[in-house]
Length: 446
Image (tube, rainbow, N blue to C red; front, side, top):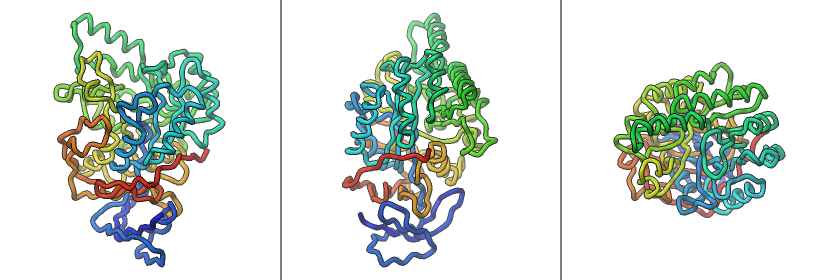
């Protein structure tokens, strides 16, 4: 493996910004210093006027393999991820077949071992009927990111709505439980009320059907069960102001037993965007009224919301351009999530130090990821070089998702990812890939 010496780079790490040299060798960050001279053969990279960030870690993606590879594959979407500065991902179990057994879970790891350009982990899936099999994941808690419970509607039998099953999982899991929280009975009631008023639903009805109350009630129930059993709970994609009442910033992240994630699309879009983008921004939970977006920003900045993710969920153009009822829910975002947040740095909405914290440091702490998420000597060299003086214009020709579309198409973002290193390997450089080495399975200090 080639060594790299990055000279005069502005390092963004652990709340500090400083200009240093960085030596990458043997998969690791070997040295960080003012001026590094090395006898090792190393490729030198000029870091002047550029920033070095820890590679982003996305704790929620849907890469669709196996079973839905016409939409996306682990290879195609991990390729998009590293081009966007995401060096590690955690992928969801709603593939075909759903990940309801330990053997199916390990099959996904095998696929990633052969094809993923980024580091990877996969959630164990749950149903009303696989409780004991899901809890066997306790035996490999240092090798698996967590257990996923869909408490809101999904496909493939992943909805868990049996209260005894939920209690049993929360009471007996030694692992982090990640939840999708939406109350199915409230969703069905809202939909019925709307259909009584109008014959045909449209995308603007989505946040009324999958409402603030539907999210709040489900999140409340999850938090109550977690507190009852002292379960390590991570609530995904918070989308409402009301849910923020359930989370605190009074403890350090390492001490929290209940944490929460916010996604880039809930920070960027509001319900006003349905007029322009329609089903392209249909997702679950729904993008909601503007006051929710404003509250999410406040809570993310004051640490009630702990991490930022993408919930990357690609569907084909044809699947999105159907009637509202038939259009699939989900947005492809993994290539542009970090860039979108760096654009908000330009706009003065967030500091670059906070971006590094929410998309790298905090994710590593939340999941107890071993030796990643920070720019520290001895840690794996998952680092990204960003140019904040170059714009990235999103258009079909540079979209790397297999689905080949983005709700951000035509948008100019005020930053560019120029280099991405995964385990010290320069996988991406100015639009070109070196795919000779693949990513590694994440491990966890548990």
